[in-house]
Image 1 (tube, rainbow, N blue to C red):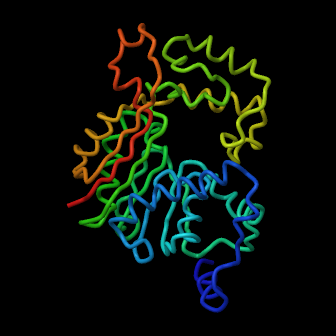
Image 2 (spheres, rainbow, N blue to C red):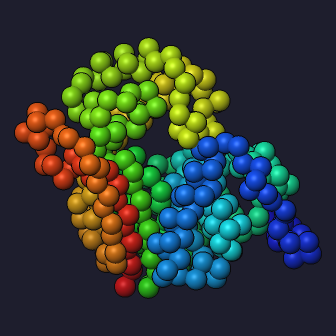
Image 3 (cartoon, rainbow, N blue to C red):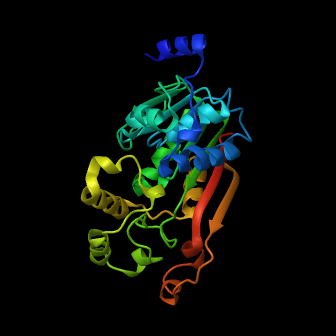
Length: 286
């Protein structure tokens, strides 16, 4: 079917779209902010219009769509263990008025820990947005080694993680719990009680397109299980795993929060872990 889309685009171009139609805040954040950040980091070292990309943990594909529409990307293959990207045609129709998804985008559902190397041609660039904190710790090394093998020599890999586990809202539960570092101070039973009893609205920018699949109570259970499965990766550990997989660090940026850290936590964890909320990491394969 992809060749038919390509043929259609050659004749009539990409389907028209209108960003003024956007009403969903989750869509807006990933279509605008996330795509801008990815392009800023990887667009400075690769020609996005000519490069081939792999998005590891593509989610709903909104950022990939934006990179095609706003920055001219021509080949992005997204992989994920869930099929949220299957919603993209409907989402693009509702939020942009698009009648079809660009042929530049392809998606694939993979099994956790499955190898990608050797299955497709090598790519020029890889990107991953808020995904590696969800990878099982014992799979970090093999997955990064596998992604290294998917990349052409001289290719680049951009990784973003936010929030990091030990930061104020590193639990990924801020939709329901606004107390900073609460996941490091409370028991799991206490956290679940707060989430389970939450009856107020959720910040619109935090409501993804999978919310409706679960319903309010099901979504609470889903995000809590996600919290329990977090690998608690620190920025230093991420860099260490990347170096161990054969990558070279081209550039990195760590963003910290300016908040008073509870003394009890400073007695248990390094301050840098507790204030480091986000990491941007650009890796290169020599």
